[in-house]
Image (cartoon, rainbow, N blue to C red; front, top):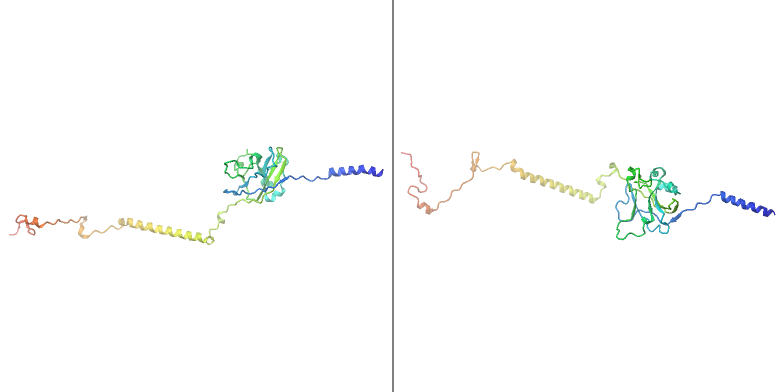
Length: 279
């Protein structure tokens, strides 16, 4: 009888412990996929405010339903471990929370927007460009999950989170490796010392400088020859000057001997045809 009386009390104690003791959290399904920068031949994969990710095509097959939404979680690397998946749509962190909480969610996509195969004839590179909507900063009417330009060089980590229509998380991918944006240099930090340039650059610069000097000398020489006649006029021979008049030399025609024989008397060559005025 004693053992029979103790058994109900023991069962009651175990039930109370089971109700009070915290139950372990059921973790989400982990999709074996790691987001990464696109490997395609694309300029500007990483800029000062954006970066381009590969689309998680085929990675979500078998995990996403027709009504599910794929969200991108963006977080600073040192804040990614503190990110808690939202339980409802109202808990989705907006882009302004990046500067306060260190993370936000953006780029909600349906499964139809991430087909496993590219459409026939479509040669475009399938990427997700994070931070590619500058209108988020100017238009206050944009949704809270607007894809706003990233305000800091980072580094960042991203992951994809699969949520159903009610905002309940269903599955998630791994976090990416750290992604650091490009940073512009101030003019004072740019090294212009020629000693740090390559030998080829120095040779090319020297050749171009020499060619520029030769072209300048040739231009000056041609200009001097062209306008020298205006500065120093050519001298005219003395026998062609008559006062200030510059004349032309006139050469008389030679009279053949046959014509000399037919001249009238007194018109022989060498005789003065005019009458003498001497007594």
